[in-house]
Image (cartoon, rainbow, N blue to C red; front, side, top):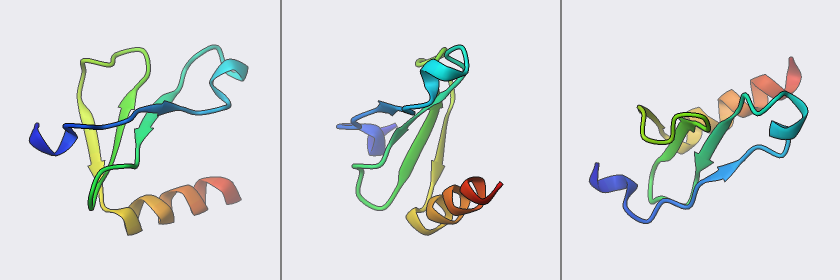
Length: 63
């Protein structure tokens, strides 16, 4: 997938507290935020628009 070229993936700081069941996020890409399973780095990648990603993170923080 061309838009993932140059993605810099980062793992949640909470990944060590939940047994490694975590996601990785690449938010350095122009116009998209990519999310993948940290245990399946070659698997599917979810792509979000920046506004949708911010809304998701804000909702997750509240719950």
